[in-house]
Length: 205
Image (cartoon, rainbow, N blue to C red; front, side):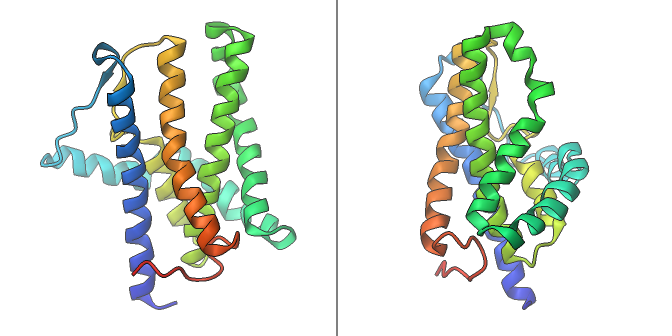
């Protein structure tokens, strides 16, 4: 693979994930009361940029999960299913993997609200899987880019801001605002690749 093309895809990938987080921040700022949300990123701070690099390459979720999800499971799934189908299956499995760490929502918000929240979480994992599959395929299925995407999506540097309220409504709105930019990017990638998600190059010029 041409290194210039690979570098270009890496740059687009990082930019897309940063912009999705910033779009979520804008939606949160617009839809949540001021007392429930804070966004205080200083782009001129060395701490921010060093934190972003650490989040990209050393995020625990990315490091411990992506060798399994994208490094092992996705290539196997893409041998049996179309890339879009493989992404949906993987996203659903990824969502189910999080049930143990999300079960507290059941006790905090009740069964109906838990199911509602988990449905949105499942949509999020499926959508982000679609996006990750595209970039993963475009750079030759290297796991390191999956780790980076996972770290950026976890957003430990708070590009998407920080929700101060633990209320169900605030938490639900925040999750929806994470999903909305992913819907836009996913639809774009699906349409441009006709569901092949990275098996053919895109023309971003």
